[in-house]
Image 1: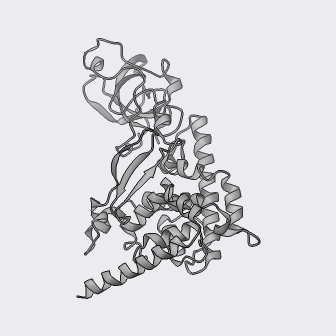
Image 2: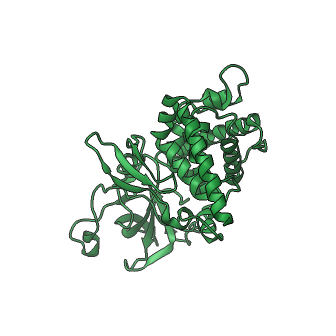
Image 3: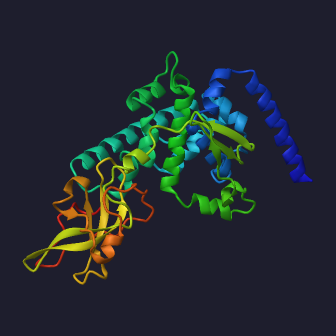
Length: 367
């Protein structure tokens, strides 16, 4: 009976919110509902909001906050604060979800931090230096880089958030930009605490979404190229979303190899230089075709798990090469440019210094 009463109360609240939404800025509401970032953020909060300690999720309330009233939406402010705390970014200010100015100040700090991480990842990538695993989401095509880059001038957005006169703070950003910022926070929180999905599923009374039953279901596409998805946690709505041109597929397609492919790398051991078989274990984000390879022992049959190197596409023909056609098992592997499969496995452990008399393959140091 108590559960039925709670459901009835929530249904009345939802109906009231829907009527409220209808009386607000229709263009802004439409912008939110057609933004993939806003929809993705809503999906995340609907699935895991309870785990974050947020009030019961109400989709119209979130839409109104993103579209029209970002500085007075208690749900939006508390959601931002909870995600900032979960992301554990190294920021100088703590966040108070009850004060818009506090949330905006910390959000501005998060934007500046992300911008700095992207600049660092870009510099390391361009100089072919080793890239720590924690920087990979900030590489071109990485999980956070694509979202944050959609904000345009990140530093200007941070200044807008900190501004206190005129159209400023969250109200000074377009609705879709507010949605992208919220989506970035969801990603950052998930990267810091990937266990949130399994933890939420184990909680007593976890929602079907948290248990994996609330994922978006792809329904198809129309002649204009728009995609249609059914989102169960978002009030069973069907959304029409235009594919994002900043997607990472075009970046990963530039990778020279694919995960699981065999290549050959140049190795010097005991004063002799030879080409030795290696397995591509991961394709890294970024636009330079970087990948991690594990080199085989001299017998060519067993992997040397301690002999791990990072190579880039431009080193092809020098430090590594595709195996000649017709060479046993290597010939069965894909040769030439592949489709650039997204990395799925965790990075291999760092390789210790090579033993005396043996030179590692002339790639980059493994991250």
